[in-house]
Image (cartoon, rainbow, N blue to C red; front, side, top):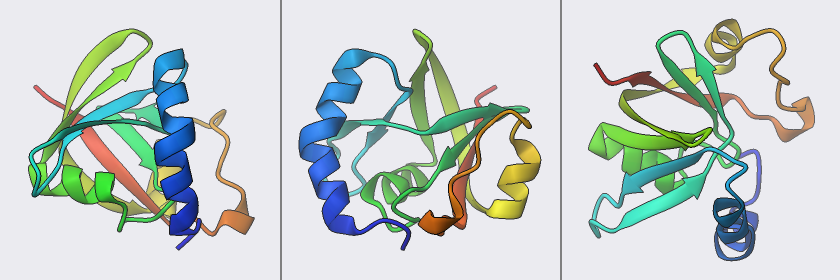
Length: 123
């Protein structure tokens, strides 16, 4: 796991609300797989041909990742617009880096991020 889960809990309570309110970051809206609660999570999301790639800073076991995989869809607010996304799937670093534009910064190796989530734009 690239980042410790305890840091994710700090982010969820302290930094995420500020990031969402600031409107600077893409925000993913998804539904809890057991609770049915709607969640909004600021993301490291990058446009790729036909969809988006998300950097999984806390790995594929994160609640938001598990929620999106279970639901099969989500909405992303980016640059003031909302887009519907579907067909979530985990991909490796090679596939993610091939899809990302050359000017997108790669995660530092020290974080050991090897998993990414790719989603397609809904038709």
